[in-house]
Length: 350
Image (cartoon, one colour):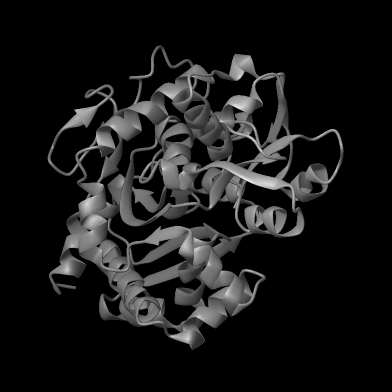
């Protein structure tokens, strides 16, 4: 999954006008390929989304994008009512661009899917003075920053950070000039499996709960159309129950749609903390350390100059939490963690 922000996306976000709060019956969600988001495609293909939408007298179309950034751009521009996105990209693109956005579903967090990989034996300290290849301004960049910080280093201690497309990462690692990369699955698995000298120095399991994978929706649309939230949550947790039960037909369909086989998909799931139980998702969204995590993310984005156009500080965007507290600017809340519909699923009220 190309989890990255772009200048175009930010500009698009700034120009976007939030959807007017109005009741309606037709909704569109966008998603892109990633282990934790494959259920969205299955929801559409299996008819489960249609079943739940029919229950509430609405229509929900789920559209796959091959370009992750473009899916967020389209949501930010108002062409979609929701999109699969990380907490970091939600903050930087739609929320940073002024679109009030709610995390309707907290699906999982990366628990090893993202990694810092170096050739030869060593540790994070050995990155000092070396070039590192990654997708700039992505969660890979964030992971590197967190890893360096854990050993008292900064990006300035590296020889350089080289912007490298995820499509070129495997080939790049095979060249003599590339000494270290930061990337995500399935690329991590491919690099580690095909290069005997590849060493995983630091991965997202070291920062659990920081790289969250979400389904975010337009706040005004959700508030005006609670049936939308109920239908989406109901459909999502029906599939979560199938996955939790190990339904191989369901898992195989997701594996094939993501370009791997059942064994490969299960390996990726093993590095993903999926919240199959809605109560677990509620707990994650309500976690006491989430505000600190989001503050760290905001500071990273501000430091890189991508926390909204002309953001005066890391507190530019307000983020609201289920207990009513906020971080950032309480007068500019544009990102909300709302457990309402996940809790309804947990309580059997959908």
